[in-house]
Image (cartoon, rainbow, N blue to C red; front, top):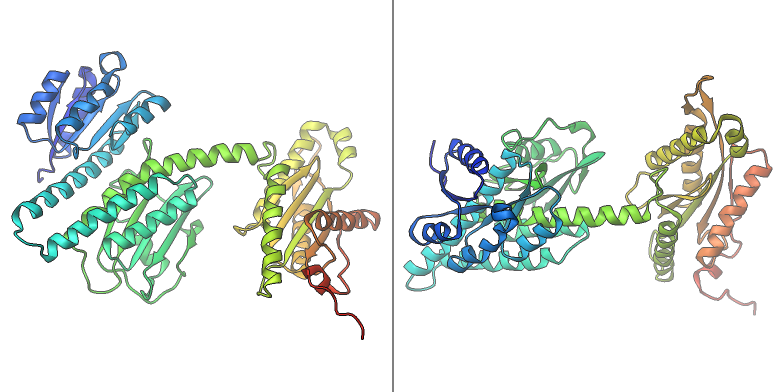
Length: 495
């Protein structure tokens, strides 16, 4: 097996040194080991080193003090840091000190291998740059192309590190892959409970391949990275159709790791006979390595945001998040209609579990909580568009915000939810139990709402009508006789 590079392992723990060195040597790397600052200095100045694995816990937890030593001798050398478990402050110190990535104890060896591979790819990229600069007497095509790649990578790093929203991170990764590799197709697979998704970005004018062909190419090395079998049938796809004419040609893929877990993959592909230039192919694992840390930070940021905006019992968004979401969507709908553009109808569906107090009194609050959880699960399943908002409004009352949905279509959605709830049982010691719910629907600008509060009141009034008319039914708010008045335009006066 061919040599892949020389790794310097820095640790005063014999177990760490032995475990890491044996694993990397088995993967065909040459491994050097040092256990203090002076030996590190000598090794970096007098031996070939392609990447450093640094134990942050050496010398009682002061291993990160050696980062400036490494970067002072060779700023371009990639350093993978091994930290203690749940090392928040240590990680921040490591990254700000110049570490390229980190792993938390207990270290998964396949994850370490992926980190080292990314470090080697980055090192090779820098070496190739120095080679071009030192051997080219004048600017030539390879040097110009490589310099442009370096500038793109620097811009990518700068832009990516400033992002916290994982959707924007994903968009930045896709555009970075296309821009830096000149590929026809860029793709990112992300596994996030409870589903996995593949997002695809084709270059303008490029014919996209089929989902199956692209997934086969993206997962070619999945098992080698330590991945398990994926549920291909339930993958969510964005940006590419199930069936498409183009075939996947040359491709470059790399794993995405968060902490020690494989959470996805990135890839760039050609759909014609063209092949990737060597420097373009080398950039993909570098981009993946850069993206891993930002994806993890974005996930943690989103997790904190979700905790602050989610109802703990049902998993739906809470009332505060609902108010923020409906205000945002109402202003969007108003702008679209003021500009006389298509779409922009905004529907609200309010529902209330029928006789919920009696149910609680009869079967107990634990069974009542199971009912509320069941309702939340049904709403998450039925209101499944990315733009839909399903929320717990309070107690046993729930609400769905459905952008770009007409009043009749909102009624259809409400009826579908009503039937699903009525047919879903909750198991109890006395056998299966069933509940029903009443629904009220309103829509901007079809109904008479001129602001968010009025739109909510209309749904609430329609819900009250459903209760009054026998429960377990859907009622809609009245349609405006002069809808042009709701758009902010004065109605024409008789002459």
